[in-house]
Image (cartoon, rainbow, N blue to C red; front, side, top):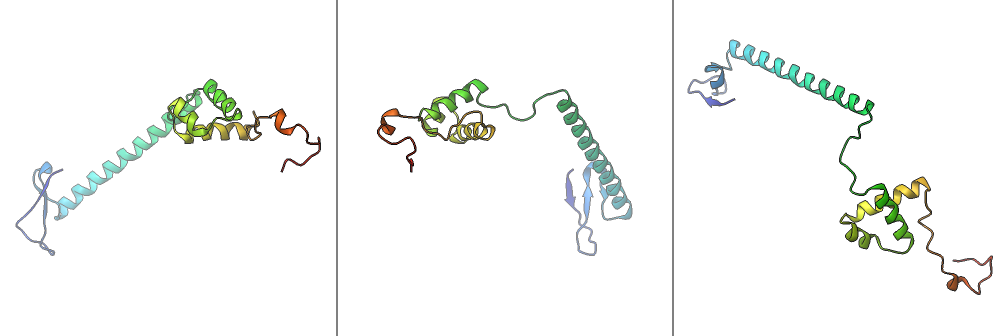
Amino acid sequence: MFARPSTNSTRLGIKVHCLALGGVDLTSPAGRMTMGVINAVAEFERDLLIERTQAGLIRAKSEGKRLGRPPRLTEDQKRAVITKLQDGASVARLARDYGVSRLTISRARDKYKEQGALDIMKPPENEDATAGEGSDADPA
């Protein structure tokens, strides 16, 4: 709504006239009542909007729809990333190769680490490096 100051003065010397309401003085009793009614209707509309939004989200979830932003990597790409990480590729390099952020690669790694699907913390075994050590030698 557009409002303009009035030349009439009130206690503070300020009056507001709402031009969209036909110039009603909002500092008068009738103006305050009008604004109270408008505020009540606006609050009611807001509550209805929230209620409809929540009902729609519940319905979508019950129908099995996935909410939120779609993932940048498919499950096959995530498995390929994990395999490449196990082979010694860097997170930054994989991020450049797949066109995603390093955080996306790290999240994929952490997801598989949490699930225990693959042991990505274990470096690739190199038989030559361990040859000559005893089978019960401490790697540290």
